[in-house]
Amino acid sequence: MKYRSTRGAMAQSLDEALLSGIAADGGLFVPEALPQFHTDDFAGADSMLEIAKILLMPFFEGSRLADELDGILLETFDFPLPLTPLPVDSGRADLLELFHGPTAAFKDVGAGFLAACLCRLEQKAATPLTILVATSGDTGGAVAAAFNERPGIHVVVLFPDGRVSERQAHQLTCWGDNVLSLAVQGSFDDCQALVKSAMADESLCEQYRFSSANSINIGRLLPQCTYYAATSLRHWRETGRRPGFIVPTGNLGNAFACIMTREMGLPIGEIILATNANRIIADYLAGSEWAPRASIPTLASAMDVGNPSNMERLRDLLGDADAIKEHIRVITASDKNIEQQIRQNYAAFGFAICPHTATATYAYQQLSQAVKDTNDWVIVATAHPAKFELIVEPLIGDVVPLPRSLQEIQSKPSRSVSINADMSSFKTALHDRFYLDGDVQGAIDSVN
Ligand SMILES: *Cc1c(COP(=O)(O)O)cnc(C)c1O
Image (cartoon, rainbow, N blue to C red; front, side, top):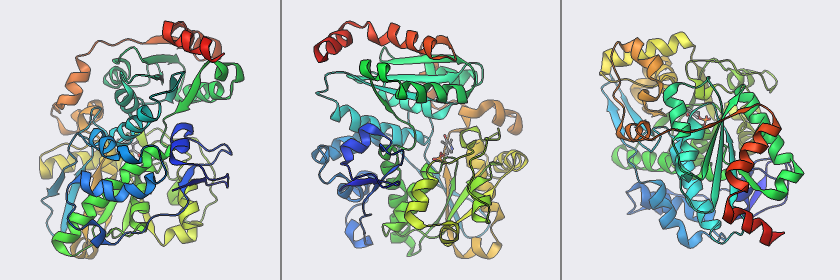
């Protein structure tokens, strides 16, 4: 299969799309044509791995990785993705828990798959790939964990010092020698600006091979389709009905994967995007122009996005706002709604949910009784509540125990380098960790 840019650049192989992340014309890579499936195509496949293999095989046609898909999937899905039935009064609602990976958020799936692909593609590279990630929390931890101690790949995580919680900071700074954690004296936007400047800096690009692992990489999108496929197929087999999905949404990566999976023919019913007070998608579908905005800080901070980049893929797939409206609905939750949901959920069901998941349970609550009675719903849970204990614990008046993965992370020593939010500090830190490194220097000398 070939991949083209949403802005029209020529088709590239999967391997090129994975390595470059973003297309040369600034667009996002999309498959030239989506494969089409019938439920019979999955006959005999029941586990996540079996279903994932059938679903993703066509995307790997012509890739150097085609014969390695089994190994890539084994590495990606080495943690469970359980479906927990909620004891709702009528109808059926299940919670799809995507937070049992190494950093307890759904981004572990995409980051793990991308790392499994890139380290196989990079096995014989002369100079290591340096992956830059600006992060305000979840992304940086998932990417660092996924690439930790992978040979031939360096990761640089830039986060705004003092603006992430202590627990989150630890998840960004406890990794091996190939991960450089930079505590930037500035904002998340400063971190992002440094990444952009570095990737556009010709002299730096002569010394390093940069790539980025943010959510626009097709390698983070593809594996997310598999849990929508597996969940909907199992539900279909069991009940003969297509479940609807409610997906907490920020940059639209996870929800886009759900929409794409339905477009490939999997038995998915209605798709509802749950957002926080950053209303850009809701306003666009209600008739406003698509205009990037500054993001508003909310309790569901990993969804604080003013300009969701995957909208470009969604328009490419479905068309303009009127066409998109035919396919999805958006329900937005305020911080007050989020707080209420966390409390209510704990009172009703006896377990805590994270603020992002709370936007989805809020959206479910907003559905009419008739829709709840006649349709089955899958509510997507994107992070473990213990990641956001400063918000969740006061609301429920109880402690949220750390899952084992986060306990392991908290017990590792932490180290980071503090830098000013300017290119010369950034370059020095990069140079000190990676450029003077013996084998890296050797590799660069031999290339020059
Ligand atoms: C990143 C993130 C989201 C938003 O996902 P998108 O793919 O950006 O829409 C939701 N919840 C959590 C916990 C996240 O980390």
